[in-house]
Image (cartoon, rainbow, N blue to C red):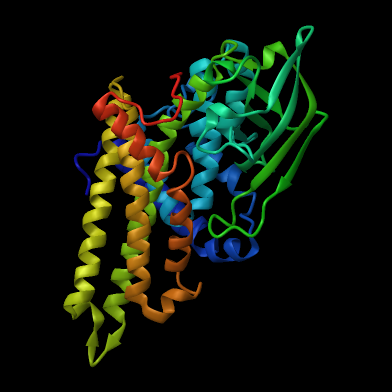
Length: 388
């Protein structure tokens, strides 16, 4: 489904598809079993320009529009969502936030390195006691002269043990969203320790970590945006991040569909390929329809962003539908494969495991419904909603 892609967009998608088929798909099962993606993939992503998409060239980015970004995320999601997550977080949440809120010096210091893959970023928002209630975070940054001393803990941090900088959100003032400020914290800072989280259901190759800050000192020049603006920066990043997750989920669903079509055409039962049976075709049809619907929802968000229009509600819709559709598609794929779908010799069980977390992070499906409901009715169902 091309929907009049420009020659540049079509070429970018083809570049990503070739890269995924050559450098990701053959190794995805191995990385999943080892719970470790080959770190050399970061340099390859940088060389192809995938870590600098939509970032201006003057800061080392590769430019391009958000539809191109969606196309790349879809292909990476089809190959291995652990690889897609590297780009979505370092570029989508960290570099883009830097581009929007950073000082000129911060942009010059960090963006060229992030876009080239010489450095990676991680997004330090989630805490052990605060997931969906991000405004309730308790990590603190206390002023001391012209510096800040940061104390607290973050968890489920993608790229956490690989990152060179944390976009950290900490409480600098009173309770609620207006008391939160964002900081750029180098991961080699004294007092910062990192522990990788193993035993995950999906995204097993991704470096997911717990970060502990014990009196980590940063200068005020490390502050991103204004004091008290952190929650707004985080929510702005997550709005765009939901588009990235949606596009990655389209990749999961399309990968599950492609694998199922191949298998159904090859697997014979009762004297003919199972693709010829009505109930198998029904499953394939359901997968195809939902994949295309999810793709169009993600592309709508990209179009709104590129036209400078509001997109938050549409991003929630895309993320909600695409993540749930990816779970349904990969679950149906296992049904098409039968017993073979239950072992990791084939890709569909990994698709299901990777898809499942997509309904949880960057806002659960239930949170997305509340955001959509608030936009539709003008009434917030969030307890104690104080706005941003």
